[in-house]
Image 1 (cartoon, rainbow, N blue to C red):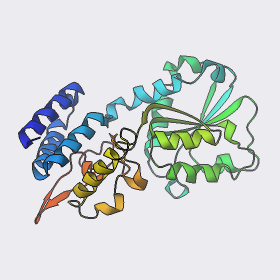
Image 2 (image 1 turned 90 degrees about the horizontal axis):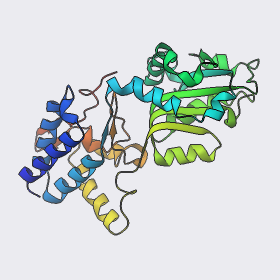
Image 3 (image 1 turned 180 degrees about the vertical axis):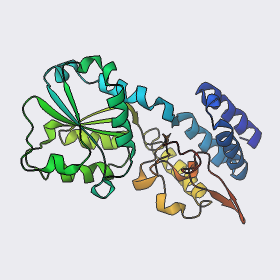
Image 4 (image 1 turned 120 degrees about the vertical axis):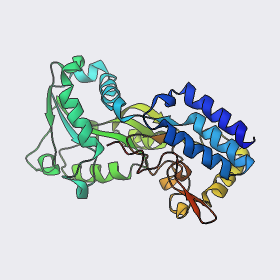
Length: 284
């Protein structure tokens, strides 16, 4: 695949995914073109293959997607509830900061009248761990906790959050529900195996491992590792943080996504911006 052929294919992907209508589409497209021009033929083919699977969730889509996820929860579960406590997925050290989970809770609060399924449920919005970890806090039979975030990658932040909440022995896994716009498939499986319900608008597969078997998988990983050699410091996020092989950009591109999509690469002494730079595409 020549550079021109790959750019032609890239243009088709942008049109099919309606990316051409985004505010920063030219920035993203131009940086993809530079990247495709800077890599080898086999590397171009792999990048295009991954772009075709890529998810780009606009900040403007957040309200609709989080509300749709809430509405997707089983009717029988909601009908049994009288009170839901909403809390963001955060690490203890991030408490008080402005994270995506907190923003989404503001959106839920603002648009709660559109949640028809929840008309008979009291919605409570909690911002501090201490409210839920207080020994006096106990969940009744008809109460539950909904943990909110836009994306769950390796589950590191989620597990840190859960560890704090479960320090209150009154909070058990069957009372916890994870509500998110997107989650890595592998992490979702691990959460479910713990007896925690998870609901998401999009379940994200591993970009290479979930679509290929050996020896083709081994060859494609080898090609990706060659691409990553162009990225200063890219080895720290090889194949995405914790090897997630993510293919997603939200308000900000998570570091679980393959680093070639969000980290600068270098040819000689010249550095090139990434298509989905975590700085330039940051919307939140």
